[in-house]
Length: 255
Length: 260
Image (cartoon, rainbow over all chains, first blue to last red; front, side):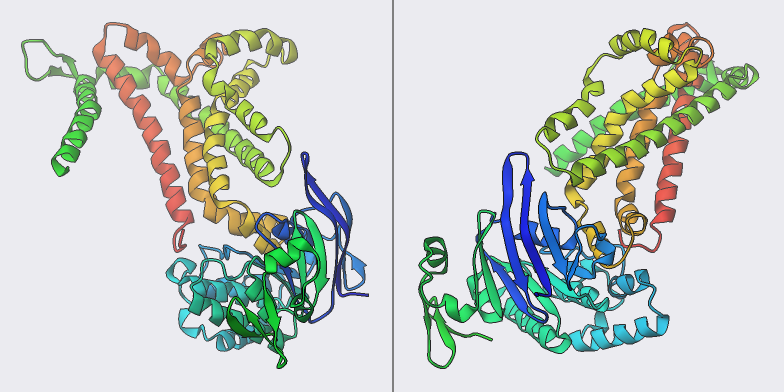
């Protein structure tokens, strides 16, 4: 049984069927990407996992328990939004500690965890700043710190590289991989960027118009899948013998 | 461009300040002949009349009612905005448009139409009817302002807070209220102004029981005593300004030390 599973999830607004029969199985400690063009319904899937939206039908299962009726605050699933959504009236320190205080962790633990995270993210100098005083990349790091502080069972990342320049994107991407390794956390990331998905993921689900078309490991997707939508979206990818792939004339490593 | 800006500013200030200066002068003088540059015969007759006739009690009550109406309108606006921003359904825009109808409908039609129905429903409770109608007319304004905040900011921050372990209520007052407080205060002030300036509702429905400041002021303004009418208008403005200043102070105190 998977650690996080979506079983036959359907979600409709008016006559628009946003999600059709979504099935996903995500193992513990996996970095799972949902890849697809804009408007495919990727964010809606994440919002259903967090509990912000209730599906019309289907089950969300976490750690062998159906969590459809579990309120958001008790799911132990934290989402880092595309727009970061840091609390603007709180300092970086208060943002990081917010979740721990809500969960009533002891002050000594809160302090300890804050030191651990600020050291890991190298954000000590920014603790007393407000989000508006930080750069986009720093804001993204704070959003990640805030999420990790409560040690969630699953970390959801909604297009985490939007609005970042290329250097910063590579920096944050490496950081997420570092977090994944260090904290051994289950991560579900949604992206429309195939390169990000291939570089970072253990498994990729391809989503199109509210449906999961296929779920495979990146190495498998290097070959033609014979599913037109997927092959057209991915373009030509060549898998080299040393595990590297050639992608849009760039050679990249698959982790 | 700078000159044009200055000119526009100057013209606006003339239109705003000149009538006010004239009114302030009229409040303290009993005559101002056309041949005189300045008024003469200093008097505090208007102020004495206001306080001796106990109209100040009516004025104060009027402010209290309007504060109550503004508070209820604000609470309803927050609830409506949250409902609309959280849910998606087919006729959402049409429903939203319905909330703005009282801005367009003539007060007279609504009052006459609702008079009979309300009297049947709440016989003998003209106070309740007056308050309900005040809310009916002030709600669209406060709703528009509050809902605009929700449209701009969304409720994602609250959802993040909930994901981090905050309950519904805690995520509302720890995250939503500080961030939206300015919008809430603006919505409250707007609702207050609309309710405070209502004349016809109180005149038509409130009978003699629910007399408000606009009602006691109107006969003086239409009358010939410029001193008294100026005093009443000045005090009417002052009451409103005091409430607005208090609201701004509360907002400043609430957000003291916060980066909002």
